[in-house]
Image (tube, rainbow, N blue to C red; front, side, top):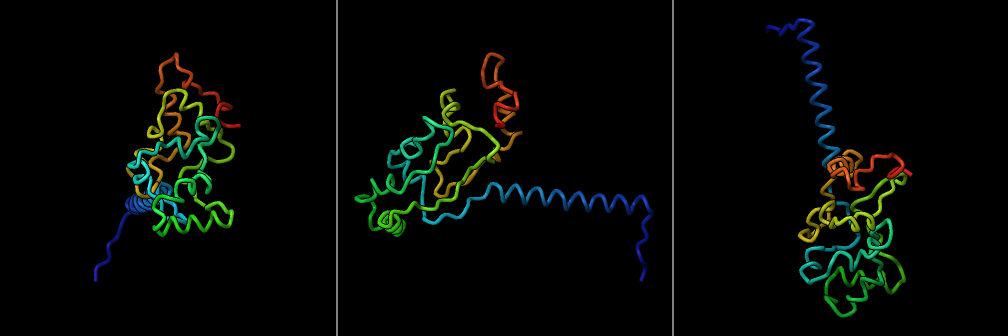
Length: 177
């Protein structure tokens, strides 16, 4: 049986191609995992709630007055669900949390590291809507991140603004506190 013999440059080229393929696969897998929907303790459809006429800011009212949009409290949810869709499994489980005085342990879909300062209030005040960053969440049965929301992604948006816009901020301490 004949063996394939490669010259040293060919071996290095093949090795480099193999390493490159492994690195690329790792990047793609990491990106796919980063944009995957986290497991949640209860089934929840943003689509169903938006179709019922509920606006993002009704449940995520913190976005209007604070840094974080926040996850609605169990009391907020059960305020409607004491009379709406009470026969659904997820709503019965929600009622169990409420009866025990517990918050539903939702997993955040989008989150920033603790060293990053991001204010929903400032961005909404600048005229952005929720979909600008979060995508068409109102069309999602299972909420998932649609953008990586890393520094490069944020800077692309900020640097794309006209000179006279405050969003042109590139001072590190504007976001890193």
